[in-house]
View 1 (tube, one colour):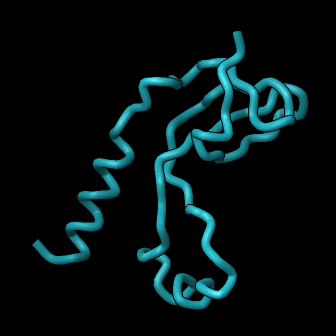
View 2 (cartoon, rainbow, N blue to C red):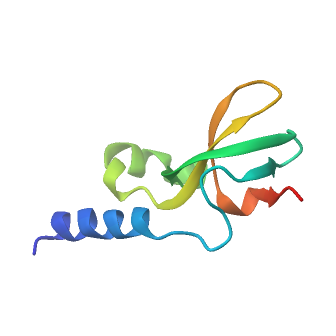
Length: 91
């Protein structure tokens, strides 16, 4: 298997991993932006140091990624892709 094929398989496996903590339809809070609903699981780009931007801009497949969540903020209707660790369950 080529390196490119390995990356594709790894990305598919990462997208199919389900969090034990959150599910589509869960009510959550995102940072201090109020209540939100989880719409879907997604792959999002990890933050990188500014100094590394040019490297990753030239090869976007190499950009570090992780599984995150697409949420809809209830107060504004805005849809945002967010990292799981920035979400809190609403009781």
